[in-house]
Image (cartoon, rainbow over all chains, first blue to last red; front, side, top):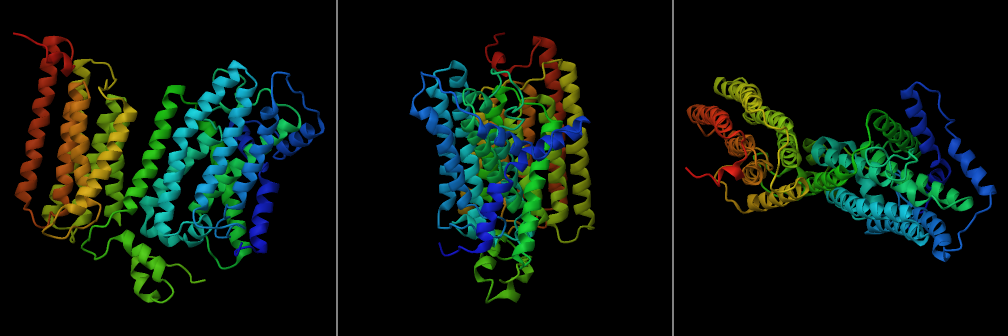
Length: 344
Length: 212
């Protein structure tokens, strides 16, 4: 808990408070593209408030698993938020290997949703659970490989130190690696959050839905927990992507914070644009898309493992890593490599 | 830096070729790959304005980016085959093979003793991966057009290797290789046309059961 400070806490509070804004921004962007005015940006807050005041109805065939699912899923998402850095602002909880915890918590959240869906005994929900398990099994390697490539680039094994060490200098010296990682993360974001090329959150045709079909039997506060958990998950992935695309480090935490916040909202707008210009892929093509995300992330990881000597002396990747390690004492020597990280 | 960028794009075009299901898209991607490799010696060489480097660049871009796609599209149109690749090995396994091939290429590049230093640490892996991908495309796809594409990708892999050390090889060798490839693609285009006219298809797996 060494890194606990007020800005870290603020980033978690921002996540908890602002996450329901992201689906609002996405639907607003989609409405703009369609020429409509669209629902208010705060719609999900109203929905959550409405659902929270309702009572829940439980089928007699369900067990405690069905009631535990939404709560455990929301709790898992909240724990994942605790290890999530916000741009260069470190997370309240940081330790070596916390990226595995992040992936594990998202996996636990998914598992609880799937178990709750299977508990109802509905064939539709079973179908949705099967699809969710299949597609997320393909998306998870992509996420872990992408985070692994980032860990390799920054030579750190904690999300907070990884994202803290990232700078625009890395984009200059290791552009291809970071671009491939970002591309893989975009695909994982769209797949994990049931967004359009993979799943259509608006359709009410059970045959084509994945995520929505699993939560058909939940109502009232349980459904609110599920929707809020989904918003938190979208926040987590958007933050991972925005912090990678905009590794700002001005020295002023407030300014860094504002930039990353703008980046997160920008990612939400980007998702809205993707949803507006693309159609949902056929179900058989989705595994191919997810495998290509894994392949992109794996290529990024392979590129960082490349040790051949070049004419310029040391290979760019090694030089970048060395620059990262020796930065404070050998500052002028590393300038030539294009790494211009301000010393903190 | 720019060389790394181009080489990564070449790696990605190879992966796209392995995962793509449309013949037309494959031909276009192979053309883009050829053009990317065409401008590679221009960046790799110290003096971009040198006549021979410029000659190889312009020749490669025109040949691989314009002439080959045109020849292949013409063969495709005359053969009037369906637009599907029809693989023996599916697209996802092909992509995974590509990943394995890439890992092997990176590993091999660390084991190869090079007599002269290369411009980019990605050059040797990219060249080896191009060769692997080309060979895999030749053996894993049914359409004869794909065999030509596989041959082109294979040649692109060899060219990648040559482009990195163009300072050491002579212009004559590069131009000779380009001419060879041109003739090969030209002849193969005519072959596809004749196979199609004789047998009404260009599926290589059905050709193996022919008797005269």
